[in-house]
Image 1 (tube, rainbow, N blue to C red):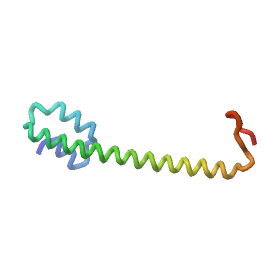
Image 2 (spheres, one colour):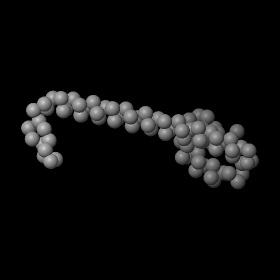
Image 3 (spheres, rainbow, N blue to C red):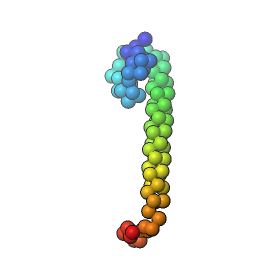
Image 4 (cartoon, rainbow, N blue to C red):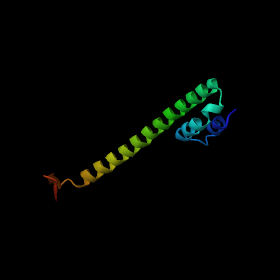
Length: 86
């Protein structure tokens, strides 16, 4: 097993680190294994993107909830041409 696969299996590499390492090592690894590593990196990249989307969505939901609470507590306020009037 190559060092990249070891790092991936132990969750010690991000996909970006893995791609960088592969670019340095690809000439010393059999082509079939390069394809296998690329497949693992692709899967990890998708997982990382999915995680970022979940985190962004949670942050956005939290901000929306905070905004809803703020707006509902300021029923007497309104905005007119970017000026807050209370």
